[in-house]
Amino acid sequence: MLRRFIAFGLLISIPVFAADDCDPQVIDQNVIRDLQQVSSRINLECPNQVNVTQLCNAVADQIAETNSSSNNKYSYQTKIYQAACVENGDSAEIVQAKVQNFWNRYHSQLNCTQLGFTINNGHILKLAVEKNSRDFINDAIRKWKVSLNHVDSADQRTVLDYIEQELNNSKGTALEPTLQRYFNLFRSNGAKFKREL
Image (cartoon, rainbow, N blue to C red):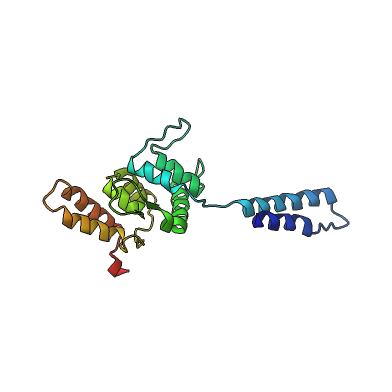
């Protein structure tokens, strides 16, 4: 509302000046066009918040995208791209930058309370590890290159701390190789322990 008020104020408060040898209608149209562009930028709120519950469900259950007009394989991709204001035709670099901008702004709100998730209100990356959501993890680490060093308020640990503990608890079980791969993947892509931050 405040942004619209500012934009409206800009529209009515900027005078239009025309030199004697210029066509006032051309100047008026140019000024109006410029003000419309400024106004649209003021009203554009990107990135946007995302419905975290729906996003967590999409990651945990690896829900396929059902919209036939979407180029995304998974619902979580569509939700993140919408929140990050990714547009059709954006290059991989632009997509990455937009998702990073979204992630940096909202990472502390991306907490999940899924049934069976061992951390109540834990970060979405930890949920992805626990639910073995490989594609989400690969997107986050390799495609989007988001920050991996958020200290979760729920358990005061980073995702690497979490994986290390789960790995120690899973020695000799069928989960150990998967957790070791995740540990190596996160570590080699810049993930740190809380003590290293």
